[in-house]
Length: 393
Image (tube, rainbow, N blue to C red; front, side):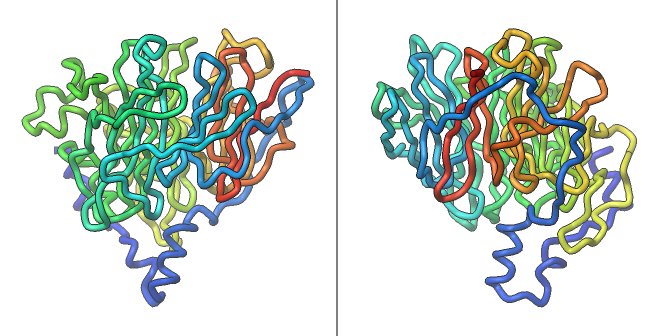
């Protein structure tokens, strides 16, 4: 079997190689600060050409992760501690979401937020979050009804079936496709990277479900003997934190964190193996070689490789229907944690040209969102973060 064949050729490097000789405090710092091996992206120029203004919508956010704008113009911002910040009519309030078994540690906690496709009728909001304890934790998908100032008790839709014993690499990004199925990313758990190549493990995968938690009958491995494999849409991922739909070309676009180097941009297709950890352009954080391969039969190479790493976080697609910034049409906008910029990648050119955008916004950037009117919202990172809105003047 292909998923096992590479094991005899690949000598895997474990996290213990990095932390050997370190005390426990140093090891934890290595885990939490692992992105800081990167330098800047080479950008050809700065976009957009249009004049714009930047407004602060929310401030003093505590480790936010994602945000959405609702049809009435209000905003929901997730914080990893399980709170959601509601911004409406220039007022900012914070509410606790009673997520069953929420696990806040390392990179875990409350993560992504998306609207159900029938939100105007159902008022349902979908969350991804970490659940469990250190010895056994997992990514979970849940939904709750939002009544304008609080959430009902969340209902769990789906639990990643493979538990892990690390508080790292949850991935956790969710995307509703045009057929109203949900794809979401599950990270490799950091210490369990070999699992990204095992179909029966749900670590290091992109999974696809219906919004009631059932599985679409056209998933690529729906006939697999192992039930866990039947939810798998694609495999060979490390820590996918960007998922968007390019409705102009009908592509699912993803990005993911590599180790020290090897951050990737991909077009996702059903059943495809994206190679981690067999093929990578990155090295381990100790600078040890992870794999001798940068290509391997049956595995897809990235469309874009960022080496050194930029640590991509959020991503949004600026499509042809958006008109506020015409120069950004058919680009993906990507926030970065290490490069500390908002960058764009031109999907229409076929060359995936990269540009800096809105250069006044800098620092660790967590997420980006395109409003219905084509304005660009950027969420900064950290314990005193902001939500910023960029509009044409």
